[in-house]
Image (cartoon, rainbow, N blue to C red):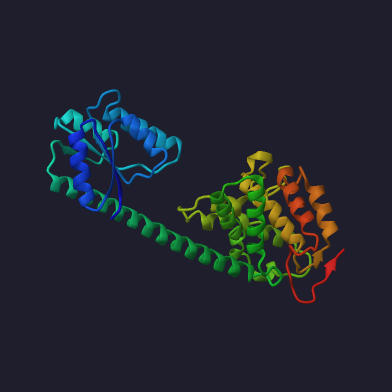
Length: 345
């Protein structure tokens, strides 16, 4: 066992009996005479369970537990399991103790075997809860990994519709995640925008392949069909109620900061922030990938286009972060790679 049990009581006989009983049960026991002594002790020593007397001079058990919980919250410590030791079994005492977070009560004077069993059973319950929590976390991680794999597979299927954009969605997702990281997004929000980036073009499923792969200039009618993919994507992803943010990237990644984008003509900060980030990442990858109508654009021209689009096509904050990423990529490796590819001026 070797769990670390602290017993706090101002009665020397109670401390001696508890120490003897729990030590024989295989626990490491520390006995203290006051709540203040315990609060000083816990700041420097790990505690697996606290047995706490209620009626003590200076600071009673309720006050000690309140102070402990406050210290744990302020210092981001785990919650210490507490059993109250009490000579009273009235309902008011138990109600107050439970409301403060006590797990159980043991009436004094206690029978040695009862004390040992109550402590052992509660610690075993805590161990089982921790094991269950670990298993849940493990399964959740497995499910999330599977979800990312499925989304990645779907993104690859979308990209496969276009002969010239192999890996586009994955690159956009990666660029958007890096912009978000540099802007200060939490790891959780970075993963969220990565998923949004992977599925930003999901609406292209509903666009005929011959239009997506047309080598020449699109007619007005064909371009109108291409412009339908954000709304189509949003409709598809609206069914994924577990991740409502996915709709954001799909619907609004073609909005422009000056309000001249589509499908809704949103302007400035009315465009969701994640969509503004994805818009920069999407435009960058479009310029640095082969297309049916042109080859990869040169690094200098990409920089020029991003500068020119600040405040009109792009939110300046995110365009500047993208420019910083380009500046660091001196070998121009942050782009689509195809055999014998050519770079246009």
